[in-house]
Length: 447
Ligand SMILES: Cc1ncc(COP(=O)(O)O)c(C=O)c1O
Image (cartoon, rainbow, N blue to C red; front, side, top):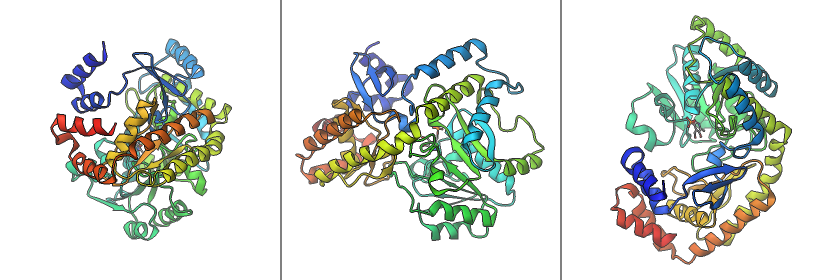
């Protein structure tokens, strides 16, 4: 099938909005990928600096992981819920060695949202009389209904409300607001240890420790959502380790298998898991699903974890991340009409831009230069951070290539007057309701 045929089928049967964007941006049809590169159906090579916002952390189609995957496929790919298998035992042992304190109990599933659901259920069972959850503005925890209910991006959540009886959203990093929202105890607090979703905000030093203390004092379950930050992205294996705390529940997904198979987990402190087991009559199937935590996914996750450890990728993110951030900051300073800084930590970074339309335009310009970056995908962010999340195996030369592409992209866009960029942004606010030819015209003039 060619570009046009695929797009037509997407438009008719699968995802018309994606088809429209794909058409307008002339996005590549991804047909294969390896390491830090993806290739389109015409064989053109792109440097992947979006990496599924952290999914392909060890690089695409890692040969060690692929070999384990094939062996496991041959042996035992899936098993019924009531079976036990070696792959899960090995994974829990390996992960357990990396996790501090009694953060040891694994609840395996297929997606980050599902893992958040497990956390919400455990918190509800732990504190059956408490109905309040505390989360942060602009936080993201997934698109299943319960997870959406604690997601602080209003445009996603509001159409489905009411979901939970009482959710308090507080500004990220604000200790006073958090204290007030927790009061004398909530069911749970949910936080990303670095706020993703269009911001990439690293919290003030000590913030996580303060939240930890408030949760311990009031018996509130502290859930750290490390779907984006986990497995080395921020320069520590888990981002909560920057603040030297231990959460009650850790949510893991994206980089778990390096994007080779779907896999996620809620990792729960033993003490809490035991209390909840008593309350829920310890039904062994209560948190399980047919395919979550399959032998295949477990074996692949174990090997991906070995790759991270053997290749020193956590250390690598800590060492090379600042160089990427420095290149982004330089580019931002050189074009102050467009760039507003380069926040982040480790290889979880990006460039903050003047508005959403500028972000779209820079993204298109980068694509033209064969570098894929991550759109912030949060239209509520007036000054979005376009994400640069390369695989952790990224080299200095590749960072330079992406940095040069960014310099050139900003240089080209800098010629457009600021007022035109702001007017285009106003029009794009109603992006998907604009007549297609008008939207096409705006994007074409900016790309
Ligand atoms: C911080 C965070 N939590 C939860 C999720 C949901 O994960 P999934 O898409 O696997 O359901 C995501 C997905 O991007 C995420 O970034």
